[in-house]
Length: 153
Image 1: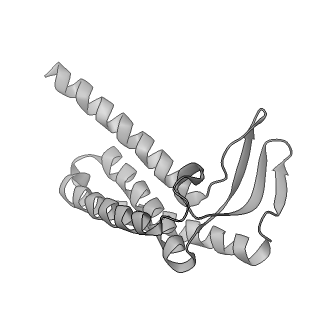
Image 2: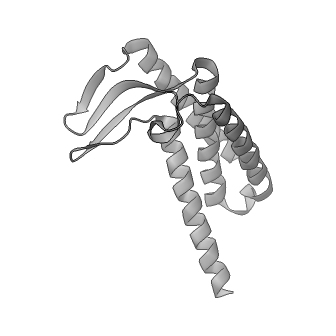
């Protein structure tokens, strides 16, 4: 199915970009891409989004296994029925597995995308995080769309 291919592509891009960062940058090294806005910054995160739950790896292992199981189930059962839903699940699956691999292999996640919005330094993230966020936003759009369509019936 195309949705697993999407997950695989996300996973490959995520792991390759993280490998490049680990091989070519020192931790905390920052390379300006667009001065004052976007940097490549080598960072490690032993927690979840925004650095919460530092060091709680067992929680991440369990949560990721459950999420992956649920996502695969929904792709199998409902993916063919709605392309937007399937694509969003593919993005979530690839992102979840990408960060899971880091946690299992290194005990932390490699982050490197560093964005400043005006004077706010957004928490450093990676390709897997981006896929997760885009996938969840697409899921929300899908749910809203479904709710509106059911309301019309």
